[in-house]
Amino acid sequence: MKEIGPIIRRATPDDASGIAAIYSRYVSETTVSFELIPPSVSEMRRRIIDISSCHPYLVALTPDGNVVGYCYAHPWKERPAYARTWETTIYLDMDSTGRGLGRELMSRLITQCRQLGCHALIACITAENTGSIAFHTSIGFAKVSHFPQVGHKFGRYLDVIDMEMIL
Image (tube, rainbow, N blue to C red; front, side):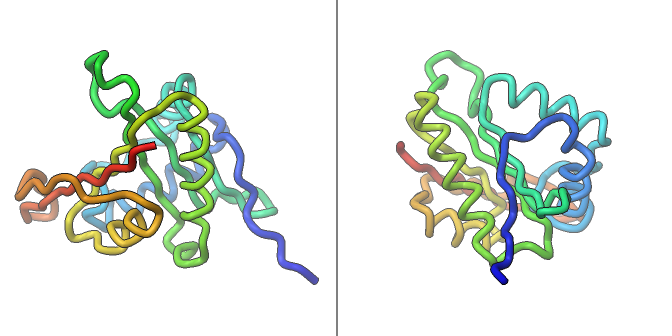
């Protein structure tokens, strides 16, 4: 019998609890996110509504409806000249990495960004997150900047790199 893979669809506010659960671990346990306090489910719901009103926001679910990953695009900068440059964000349940789910989510996100007229995508990554750097490189992003010691978390200063994909 063939195993059924995750279902990928547009995120809705009802996905906030599952998305918040995934993101909370990254905020609390890693330097992947520079947030210091995990957002509440209601805050995550607000973010989903806000972002998805103008930009693609995707969620991956198991066949029984559990959120195992999500990704979205949002404005990179506020000035009008940057309107066609968006930043991407992707998070997977820590037990769901290394199986191609991130690649599938980002592939669909990139396609939607192209269809919506985006010209460039930016991924802002903590420099010590070598897995994310390798992942973004493998799907066509290139490193375009390195900012030493611009973040501070867990008592350490952290570097950030930006990676870019021209669509």
